[in-house]
Amino acid sequence: MKPKCLLISLLILFPFFSKAQTNFRPGYVIAINGQIIKGFINEKEWDANPADINFKTSLSAHEAQNYTANDINYFEITNSVAYQRYSGFISTDETNIAKLPTGRDSSKKMDIVFLKLQQKGPNVSLYSYNDAIKMRYFIADNKAGKTFELIFRQYFIPEMGTATHNENEYVPQLYDLAAKYNPGSAELRQLIENARYNLSDLKKISQNINNLEVDNNNYGTSSSIDFFAGTGADATTYSFSGNGPFYDKIPNQTSVGPFVTAGFNFYPNASVGRFALRAEVLYTSSSYKTEVNLYYAQPDKPKATYRLKQHEIGFSPQVLYSIYNTKAVKVYVGAGFMVNLTSYSGNTTTNNADPSQVLVNVLVLDKRWLSYPVKAGLILNKKLEIALSYTFPSSITGIASTSTSNYSFKISSIKGGLNYHF
Image (cartoon, rainbow, N blue to C red; front, side):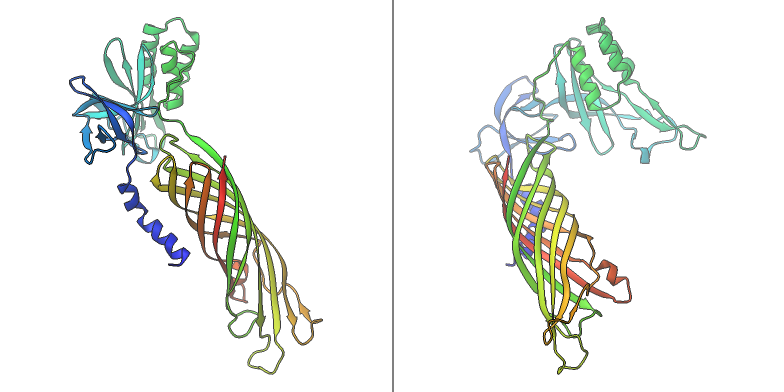
């Protein structure tokens, strides 16, 4: 199978691979009756709060048990996330500016869900709950045994067009807890007064209510970055079409040369590490040489040789997803785009019969152009990466294609290389 076909097939099939692969990590659940059951939980990159989890008492168990918030009070994955059962009211009003209601919306529903633990201490615990409607934050008064939503509403004011009103009901809610557990802290009052409805601000407040100067607990929300550098081989294929300075069809040519690359991966959820955003910079060069006919339908006339040398620096943001994901091995697929900054030399035709006859700047070439790579690879022990990529044909003569010349010079490439992560 050709490398580009293999890459495209992997991109199409990766949702099925990702569903099939499991990621059981050590942890435990607490049943409704209070029983603690140790075992292994299938950890996923939950964008929304999970409705259920898969649990095994041992990794060798063939079948996993499925637990919902109706079955267990709590579950925790070691050195990662923890979720607490909650039964009560949940607001359902929109806070997305594109979906805001006109007038105050205090709608809510009764539900039983898992809340994600974001900060805990002796006095209060902060939780989050995210679904298709919005992100919400909850806080538990640990000593009173009560958990409630921190309320934030936003809506358009009737008869005032696009003017919006914010109801920061969470502010007095937090003031009440501060007065109960840390009444003398001017810093805490200031934090609450200036608090926005986001995790960063609310975690600081929760920590202060708990009288904790430092909280070293791992709540499974940390991100991470790793850097890489590498090299490899690049096979660039040139193809020409259209009404240009050359008569008759000229053949495609492939140029093979080295490339060097460097960049970083950003993992939003470091404890799982399945999804990554990559930023990459790459340098490569390639060349094109072919015999062309400068005279239409005159085979007795001498031919010429066209030469082009290209030096390219590319900047590429990409999205990577690991279809197989363990600490020892990651197998990923990805896609993105690349902004290419290019310099050219050559771009000349030389008369084969008289080498002194040289035409320069034969084609109108773009110095900046876009390309679209897809890739697959594997990362071993978080250090060594083996990568293969295919870049779809992209025109480097976009300017010429809009002119009276109306020709196109496209390049595509296959790259294979090794990267070292640090």
